[in-house]
Length: 274
Image (tube, rainbow, N blue to C red; front, side, top):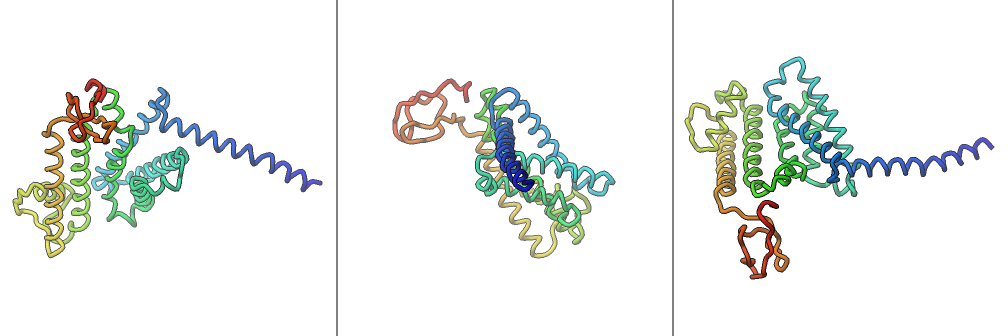
């Protein structure tokens, strides 16, 4: 009799638990994706925390010898883990969400935070968190609200260059600081990265050996490419994002009347909306 009562209680409790779990996911989905005022305030708070964490990532090579470094590191790991779980629950398809590149990068960053002494040599990849952040709509919402989305492309190009500079700086610092390359600190690694990217080549700091030369070649090629991309985004004629209803061409001149690809008549709203 007692066993039957327990089975009945468990059967009644299971739908209640599923209903509670569904409500939690629905609430998180609203917080992360809704346009409501309370949701936008929550998303803005998350964005501020993310930017603060990125500042910690940039400064971590300078802070890792301090006594508070591990405490800050694990605190950041707890914040990222909570945010990661919440975003997973807010997604409509968790498996598909886990296969996205920004999510995979976030998982790796979380692992490096949980094992900072074992994975210290790869800690410089944490700056990729800034790149993954730019893949979200919330990052660009301030520009969208002010009708300044035409500046999204140059800002994205600047962020890509910034991320590349600090990734390479971290790699040079961890890989060559003790190999007689003249790099004695993080600032020396940053100095070498910038002089190599810009092909200034003062020659006062050089990476030793074949791997050092190949590293310099990769930095120069990638750096110049990113600089050119940034220049194009800043100086080329401004376009507005307005998909052509006929051929799907995404960008047009602000005063365009016809699509340059198919000649379809366009009805582009005022530039203040873009």
